[in-house]
Length: 408
Image (cartoon, rainbow, N blue to C red; front, side, top):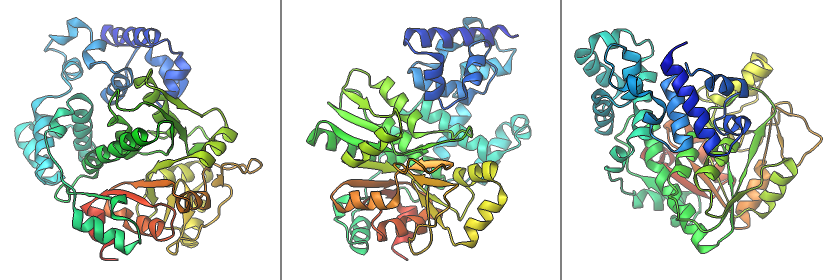
């Protein structure tokens, strides 16, 4: 066992005890199997990304977990990387991306400056994305230094196309950026602004939260002290051990911990509470899925139910999902009861239980704010179908989707 791994493990345990949380609670909040988390408290040998995720959850700098003797030792490169998670090349890579550079250009530059490090990298795209995530978690002010304006003309054009008020559409100018993960970071603050505005107008606002990277970043953008009262609840949950990197319940657990003392409450005990919360909900924030490229949902279905189910879904014309409910190009729900069932249909067993499309539509028709938040041209068809069929009535996106929506 390494001294640094033991020191990190002890530090993680100290932070958990200080927060008065159980191992189970922290594991759930981090969306990590309990046995894995328990191992982290014995000796931490996991990735820097997981350590950064722990830092974000406990709201502490990474130095909290790194032994002092490892902060000044140059002989062990792994330890140096942990105590300095933002070497200059990561900042340079981020700035290149913000100027519009694509992965090939970025990695060509990196290979010239750091040929030995570059030769050891097996997944270039993942390496570059990890640099962006490190920037976001460890030095977010770099992102905040950039200003992104809204594309008002495109907002009005999209609103007209889908018969929605223009104030319910946000299009952020970031089409020059090639990387979806950065574009998701860029649009998220606009969703946070909506949450703060709506909770100010109506204390006690009830908001449903779905899964997704963008939804997590939206919650990150709600600053401490900006909300007086809000009720959060999940829009879905799974009945499988297959883990998502970010689940709705984990997002809520993390948010509640960070905003403790500011009147944030949640109904997450069981299916009945999720169902009743949706009946009273004022708003919901959701990502949207597509089956044009393989995503997390498709991989989960394949790993649990097998390849034949996914093949059958494609045969029946599934193009995407909204809150895990599958639909075709006309917006009709394609029913696979073993894959997904409505929350509230208590007798139905399925891989995922979630708030259904018709319930989302009914909520939107009655004035509830059903928000799609996402970027990436591959999601255009799914977003268009959801807006056209009334499953959602608010949109936060960027030019990569906006331009495609206006061409459809």
